[in-house]
Length: 339
Image (cartoon, rainbow, N blue to C red; front, side, top):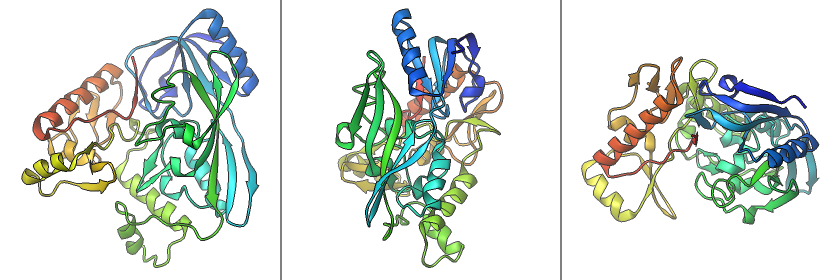
């Protein structure tokens, strides 16, 4: 296995941030992964796994081992009249996997089209978009224990999924690497989610009266492409902040002075649109050197060229402080900060 030293990570994160790893290696099999984990235990170095590099911000160089995972493969494990169980290896590109399911006419993931990253990071973040969260379609997550190298499977109920949260991001952070995910998808009678965001209006504009799951995916792709910058053109990690959830009482106070605020009610409270808060605090389109806020979607921080991770991070902190000052709402970063 080729282990490289002082290796640049600029091409391995969608922000395009220049940072170096003390050691870097790529692994294409579970056995290679077990071998590198054994090396890591002997050296007692920190370890970081990179898939698509779409949800991380390097603020400093990484003083340990960075592993680029290349675990590929999609298999149908089982199916009955209504459902199919599909297993995808962790390094499969998420959007390409979603498109594969749609080609088979398997329903469930269409609203999650064009989300950057790989399959293995989907459960960790419990990715979601347009009223759908991936947790509702995951049955199992296959992992390796970083300390022992042993394989362990987590059932859905073991994952402690929440809004952009999971056990792998919180209680067990840094203890497991996710190597595969099993999904339960529909074969017929697909449940369509078209009432969230701009999907319904997009379908109406395209004169789609009886949408299929493929129509919904196409609508989501058009919406996302119209709002979100392409990381190959402008460095970014998609949505930088979570949509904050506040209590009904807190919402009653905010809406008095902000009657046009963007929100929707959930079982756990009122979810506000972080993009609306940032835009109405005056940050949309602002640029400070090469670090900035996207001019079409205030939820996205961007690297226009040679911004450092610290500059992006400091910008995010200024936004958090300003939104707190103006609205009394605390924003939380969705992106993983590597300090």
